[in-house]
Image 1 (spheres, helix red, strand yellow):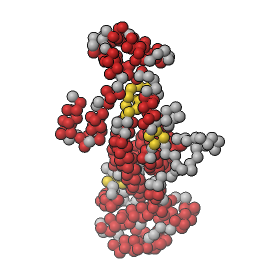
Image 2 (spheres, helix red, strand yellow):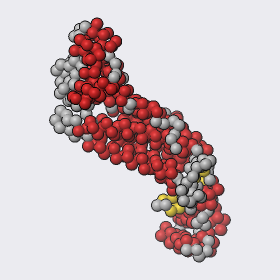
Image 3 (spheres, helix red, strand yellow):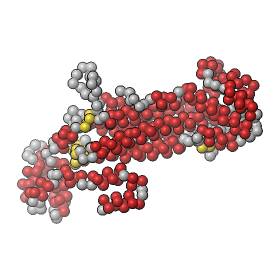
Image 4 (tube, helix red, strand yellow):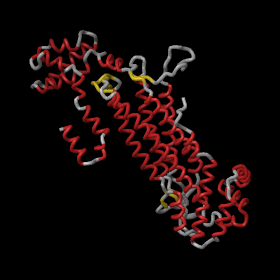
Length: 448
């Protein structure tokens, strides 16, 4: 299933024509800046702006000969512009245009991913509120632990999505830098004011210092942020896959009318969406390793990073855009089965309340080691099918010295485990999480 929200806008960011149009805007703004400084005629800028355009077919023909994309681009422009073409790319090196335009495209891609994360955040919040009090068993090591709610699971994902939003905004700022400082980054042939003018037009900051390129630790931060977000997608999808297992079946991906799960077995309803998310997340994470390898380049630069980035940046951003939108749709339409959650909660016959009994014994003066041994003995007997856990606990003389039968039964109520549910929700979802004093006081009152 292709999400109705995804692909076209992100794909357009990396469209070859859009890239070349960005190159052209940068070249034109350089000409404007040079004209403002009196270094080229203003009439030449007007002529260039009027005549210059993108002819991809002609550029490709030239590139077949010159084997250099920027030179082919410039030759294409010069053919169109004529005599004034000598003012294009004046004092620049290829990386001035390539890296500055790449920063612009990465900003555009980041904006789309941020919008995706905001939509995922909103869906998680809505469904976390919907299932706030839907009790289910919590698991560690895949084994039943103690009661939680499905809403708490979604709230946990919501909080992680907020962190991913913060990370993505920081990564966007990390690559909000352009450079037009020439071949070795010394501004030998171009005044720094030209760089400042063009970067301002692009919505970028001038790199405080560069050599021939923007330093690739910035790009690595961006790609590793995409990888972290993909890791969260995989984490959420893996949980959905586990909860959809036949033996569990607490949630299920929406299964549309006419959908089929298996070419051989008509009964199958498989978590194929979540499996797709887990698989594709691996590509985004692996691309981050390639970005890390791009940080170390020879001297003032080589171009070993360039070929890598032409693959990993479009692929990772397009993939993550798709992953986030598909995950959001999946959570929005997720089928949730509270009755199955309740049945699974009770499947072990109350074993999940063992810690409560242990703690109540300790509060009433029992030694922890003795109390643990007594509770575990009855838990293991019940685990092996030798009677009900509660009956064994009630019949134990040691335990009866400290707890009355009704007090033992009270330990088997799931509501006890949810008594701080409102406080957790307020901490996660309220405006007080932003750190205002009144909010912190409210949270202190809730937890103390």
